[in-house]
Image (tube, rainbow, N blue to C red):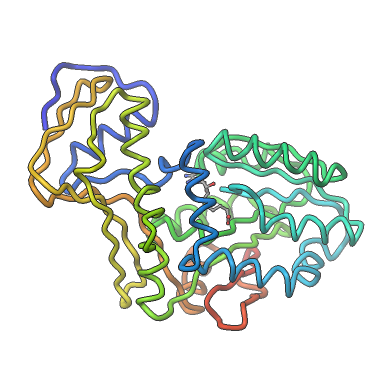
Length: 323
Ligand SMILES: C[S@@+](CC[C@H](N)C(=O)[O-])C[C@H]1O[C@@H](n2cnc3c(N)ncnc32)[C@H](O)[C@@H]1O
């Protein structure tokens, strides 16, 4: 690759695309999948027969939401439910409905890196559940954790659904959980979804559906570079590739260049060279078991106080508190 001339990189997107595509091996962050187009593709993914994650978490809430919600505020002191990476909030609405039914005093703060997702969720909630006090915010996980204490002075329940935590390698997940733990008061809680280890084929299929929606979702990061950074990626010259290592529990998504080629990203004054079959690593989707979650919690100064599972034990939501 070649930097055509010195260029001052302004946005985080510019900086991270530059860093990732000038590194060896190349990588891009999955957080850049999500814009108006990416959000729609992810909604299609959630409806795919292969994508069991959404259905299983939905089943857990449909079965256990009364108990889950009751455990959020046993002292009935009032609290703020802060959701990181909320997306379209479809499953969250089950919990919100139960919170209203139980007459609990709460506010809901959905936070997401996608402005489109936050706007969509706040609008639908205002129409569907006008009694919920909603304050949406755009933000990136780590940046939000830096200002978590200022976000709410009440008891906090920090929620992360959809196994979003699985987009972080264990070392990064521990940084995330430690930061979260440091920003928490003693009676604050974390409610977090962790997709469990299972038949490797089932995991692979979830990230490599037959209809190609996941491939289009993965390629949306290239579309965004084309649109927002004046790039000229030819999407047909990259293929989606998924791997799953049952030992580490790590599923990885790649975009693989099907031929030797050069791509220009004009706004970065960057020429990116690809050898035939060279890859860009774009996403990890970590799978867990109880021991791994216990270890992550211990390393981060947290403890598990309860867990809820679907009938198949494919997915679990853990309630965590400061150790
Ligand atoms: C896999 S989707 C899950 C959405 C939702 N939690 C659910 O379970 O349906 C991940 C969501 O997190 C958001 N997201 C991804 N990376 C993020 C980051 N680094 N900071 C904040 N939000 C992020 C995306 O925009 C997307 O809405």
